[in-house]
Image (cartoon, rainbow, N blue to C red; front, side, top):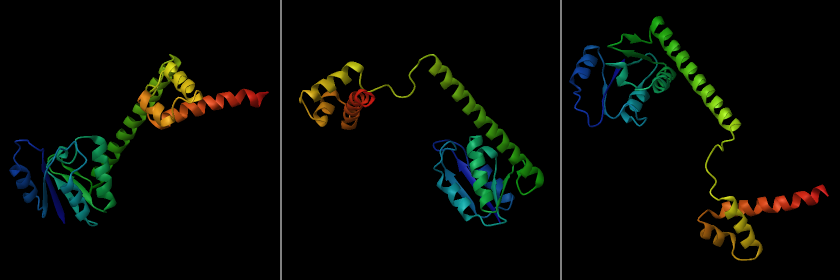
Length: 195
């Protein structure tokens, strides 16, 4: 069975008629219609169409960009279709995963996507290493300055407030205050262990 999927972007002036005509001419029945952005993962009708696939069925779209706006999402969707034992066909680009050339092209897309992920990972790791070697702090900015941490410790040791009260005073969470105090206690214990 050939199952059609015909989406249009939300708020767009696109007309569904050309898609529906092409899918009907290709013998698709049923045809799932959807008004959603291709960039968003929440496409209920696409999920329903894939859920309706049985082994041997083919999900058909008018154009490849109707199925996905990114290579990563396209591959994820194609994996879901393959897992259902079904095929995929794009009428305009003449892509058909039920044929050997179509499967080869899908595998090539997968290889390019994996290469892209590896390159992004490599660039990210290189950038992080460079930032560390330059002495830059990575991650979130500390919620307390060194002076504020010292003041929290001094107030706690003088009995001038509970962790909850100090947290409120310095506008941080109670767990942040507790971490500051725990780290301070551990620093005090360390020298006595060495002695």
